Length: 248
Image (cartoon, rainbow, N blue to C red; front, side, top):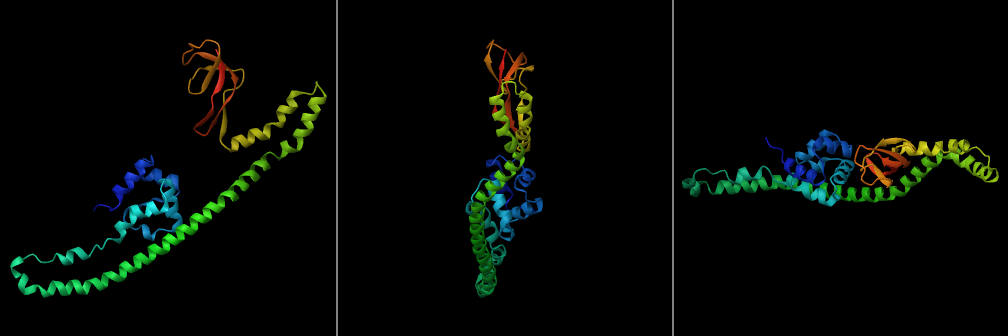
């Protein structure tokens, strides 16, 4: 038995550079069971937060997401077999009133279900709109929380840096190691953000054009040749922020 929305979901995942349902679940934080319900045409039964997460992961607005999956859930699956239930054309004059009666009897049964679905969808859309507005308002709150966490890590540096900088300016013999030690909170902050240095100043490393910028020396340097790090570079997770500056 085929699952109604599998092909549609696969198309949208491909457009969003998502390999499969497992990666979609990982990106969105939605369980595989909820994704399975989406594939089965039950999007109107999913919680609001689940639909919003899936739409964001697929890089769609909530309205576009609903447009992609709601038609399958609203299709009157039982109506077609009843209309087509007459295998013998020669008997049509005798049983003609019966199909009409069946159709007329069944239509009132389907209409309430359709009305319930439409009412549920209208309520769902209203809830989506409210939730989107709430998420928009949360951006400022999240920024304040991020700043508070950063300041908490940098607290020791904030309390001591101004005095140390003043002492260094007044005393040429002020030990540089003291200033270096005060930068430790900054390093901790960078580590908490998954920011890591590329190379250490003065060390020799194998030249990698993707990670190193050659600023001095032989510009015919080949990958793998030894170069010396002049300025460290930085990576943020798997993203490159700055290449390390090296000399041949």
